[in-house]
Image (cartoon, rainbow, N blue to C red):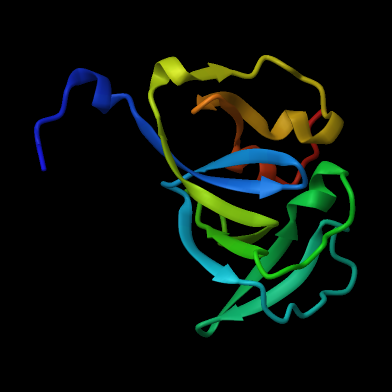
Length: 154
């Protein structure tokens, strides 16, 4: 194992690649605290439509958000590969994100990432900060801060 890092490695970032519907998304690994199997979710009355409810994760109550609902795509389909990704962004509360499947951890260099200049909210475009290219596939990089902010993007 070579521990020397080239200047190119310094700009590399790691993402958890997840599947939501037919699309692939990336969540920065710096925000990911845990990945858990789908479990019993307790509904919370009068919460936003995309908040499915809360789970008890080792004694901590964690709100759970459906990314499918947040993006306005088809209803959740829970299967064996459905996971809840527990994210802990700076200055924001811990939140669980329901994804259809967790694929892999990908490392992307800056030259593999293009910033998103789209200000369109169709299909969650406003929640995407960049698009990464990995092995011929595109990965939409999620902006966790925008995704978890209370305000809907315009």
